[in-house]
Length: 550
Ligand code: GLN
Image 1 (cartoon, rainbow, N blue to C red):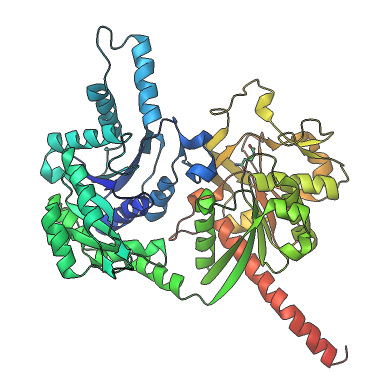
Image 2 (cartoon, rainbow, N blue to C red; image 1 turned 120 degrees about the vertical axis):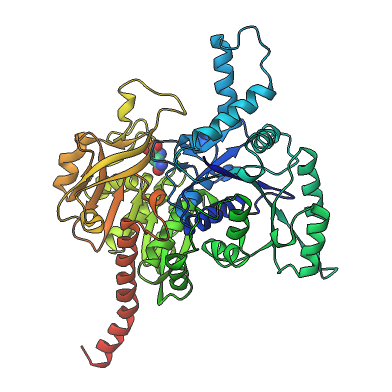
C-alpha cells in the first residue's frame, strides 16, 4: 500500500512548492523507494492548454498527451516517475466529470455537493495514481487560505483520517521573511498560515521555511512551539544557485529521515545514495567554459513560459561541462530592427515553440541569418515551421510562402493544418498531442545525435509540413530526416551543408533531465561550442594573418 506526502503552501505563492515536491521525490528515490507525484490545481480550467503562457507559464506535455502544469516538468526532471493525465487534476476537470455524470443521471434522486461528491472525486484521483509505488507525493496548488483550494485540502484531510497518521505526512512550505529595517527574520506569517491550516483540520508535520538566511536554533524552536511541530522538522529551505541544489539542501536537513521515520518506511528504505546527483551538481557549478545561445521567441518577458526549454539547454551544456548563457531576443524587435547586430555574437540560435502571428517575420530573419552565417540553428515546433517557410521563400524562391496559421491567403502553404481537411477544428482538444514514434534517416544530424534509428517524442501543435511541397523543398537541399513510421507526418528537417541546422516538429525539451540530457540539446550545444571556438579564433587568426603579411 502506498504512503502519502501532501505538500501545501502558505503565506505567498511562488515559494517553489513544485521544486520542493520534486526534490522530496528525488530524495525518496535516493533511498530506493518508488515514487510518483501528483499536482492539484484549484482553477476552473479543465487543463492549462488554453491559458496564456504569460499568465500560467509553460504548458508541460506528458507522453499520453496531457497538457499539464509546469510543475510536472520539475517532477519528471527530478525523478523517474512516469506521469500521465491522472497526475494533474484541476477543479475544472473534477467538476466536468461530476457534472457530466449528473447529466447522465448517475446521482439520480440525490443532491450533488462539494462534500462528499467533489471530495470523493478528488480522493478517487489520488487512488488512481497510487498503484505500484511506495510513495505518492501530492502537491496542492495555490496558497492556504484561498477559497478555491478548500475542497482539495478537505480531501487530503479525509485521506489522513482514513489511512492513519503513519501513512500520511503533511509538508507545509512557508515563508520566513527577512525584514531589513528591523534586521530580523519574522515568524509571524508562518504562524498565521499554520493556524489557517489547523483551522481546517490539517496539522503539518514538516515546515519547509523559505528564507534568505539560515534560521537560528532559537527561531526554529519558536516556530516549533507555536506551530506544534517537532523542532527538527522545522527546515530552512534557503535560496540556492540552482534548483537542482534543493535535494541536497533537504538531505543536509535530514528531510528524508524525518519522512521515513514518520511513515514507518525504515524497513523498505535503503541508505541515501545521491552519488550521481551530487556529481552532476559538481559539474554544474564548475563548468570548463561557456556557450551563448540566442533564443528568438515571443514570450520573452516571462521566463516561466519556456521553463523546460531553459532547463534542457542547461542539461545540454552540462553534458559538455559547459555553462549556457541564454539571451532572450524579442522576435518582434528582430523584425523591425537591424537583425545582424541583434543576432551577432551568439554561438547558437534557437527558435522555440509558439502560437500566433506576432514576431514570425523576426524569427524568419533570424533563421536566414543562422543559415547564411553558418551559425548552429535549432528550431522547435514553430521553429521548424518557420525554418521551412524561410527555406521556401529564400532558397526555393516561393514568394510569400507561409504557414496557413499566419497567412490564410498565402500562395504557398508550406505549413498547413492537415487535420483541417478532416474537419476537426475547435480550440482545445484538436491538437496533435503527446508521444509519436519517429523514424530517423541515415547520415543526419538527428541520427547522429540520437544514435538510434527510431525515437519517440512529445508533440503539441496544430499545423504541420505540407508534403505537397516536399519535391521542391528537398530538390533545393532541405532534408527530411525524421518522419512518422507510416510516413504521414514530417517530424525533422535539416540542411546538409551547414555545421548544424535542424528543426523538429516535436518538443524534445519535455524529455530532458539533468541526469539524462536530451540528445538534440547535447548535439546543438556541441555544435554551438564549436562555433564559439571558430568565432573567437576568427579575429585572432585574422590578426595573425595580417602580422605575417598573408
Ligand atoms: N503554432 C504552431 C502549431 O500550432 C506551432 C505550435 C508550437 O510551436 N507548439 O502548429
